[in-house]
Each structure stands twice: as C-alpha cells, then as structure tokens.
Length: 128
Image (cartoon, rainbow, N blue to C red; front, side, top):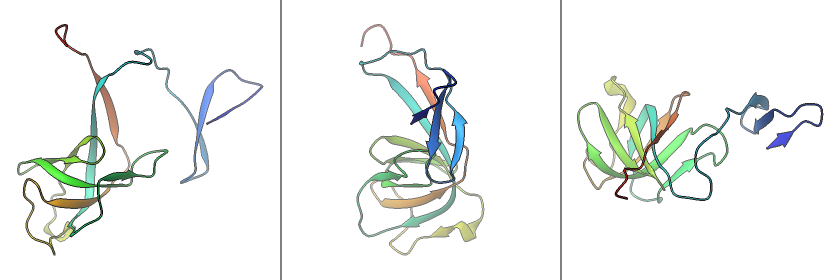
C-alpha cells in the first residue's frame, strides 16, 4: 500500500493493473476475529487432480479460487480456498471442464472469477 504525503486518503496499488484506487474507510474491529462472507462469480470451473487451496493474487481482487467444495447446489458452491468462498456458478455448459469428475462435495476445483468480488462483514452473535 502506498500513501501520498500530499493527501491523508489511503490508497492501494494493485499490481495486476497499475491503477491507484482509494480504499474504503474501515470502522470495524481491529486485532480480533471477525466473520465475513466472500462472494465471487465464476467465469470457468475446472475439476483438478491436485494443487491445494488458494486465492490469487494475494493483493487485489481475486482472479483464481481453488479448493475443495464444501457445499454445492444448482446455482452456487462454497469452496474452501484458505477461507470459505461463495462461488456463483456459470450458466453456460461450455464454462465447465470436468476432466477429473463431476462437481461434488469434497472434489477439488479451480475457478476463474469475474471482476466484482465482494467482502461482507457479518456481526458475531453475543454468545460467541
């Protein structure tokens, strides 16, 4: 993250496109656990034989999400990719390459995501 000496506004530089964007103000808790929902829409989905769980790039909006399916229905899946990620499935049959078997809970998948991922903070309940 770079900051300008002329401005007190925080800015982030995403190495994926060399564009400087203002960061939204964060007023949530610091140095404590939070709960959140990460949502992405998938462009393509592949079943893969190996490779681990990850989101890339590390900085900036996600472009690739890979991990094991924890939940699956006809519209979305939850992929454990370091953190659980809610993935909206593509509508076109041509967007699927299921070389290592059909989509199923426990299967390792790789998905290319479209721009527009969201991060939504969810309040922790009082009993947690």
